[in-house]
Length: 279
Image 1 (cartoon, rainbow, N blue to C red):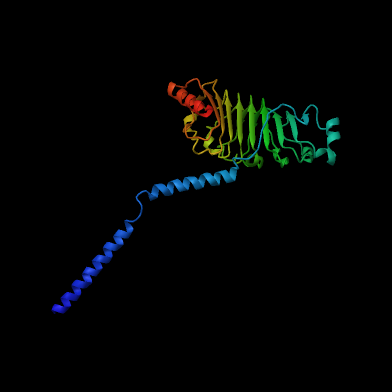
Image 2: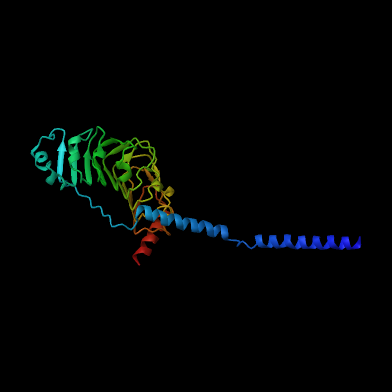
């Protein structure tokens, strides 16, 4: 009986030691491992975003009012210009077109397969943009446009510029998945509160005299916009509030913000960042 008690005691001691050893192994997890994991995740996401957007690409947009061809509803497509440029060898040279007062782009213009830039003036909306497979730049002047988010051009466009124009039909900016430059001058989106953070590939943001719903610029998180390098914001109608968040740690190259409601602290942050960049 005494021997049996000793055996049971030994087994109990061995079991206790193993349990303690297991607990000690569990406690070997570094106390900051969860934080490190979060940082690693952010780095991976940033690298993936850069790969998708190609933040370091050499894409350059220089605005000008000239185009290779121009057509209007009054001038029509029976003009000498269309006849001259519509043969195959000449059509391939056309890279930009100006369209005035069309509500639908004529199918005839699909012969210009190399068009990269489209300038539009229309108060009747516009359909048919998808006939240009290589389109990268879309400019509007004095237009009222209802945008269909199911159109293919939205996910391929790199520059969206509006001047004295009004846009509607969108519930978010997310469909602009490759947009690099958003330029709105005396223009705005109707019934859409802009969430700039949705534009992950954006490199240049320019808002001057924005005419849409009020934008709280504090909600623009520069930590989420790894590609963004240039910001120009000039308020005129009290529709732009605050300044973007995390300016000090951002990858910005230039920033200009002049809002009617800017306070001293916001002005100080902008000023300090500019000084830091000029050194």
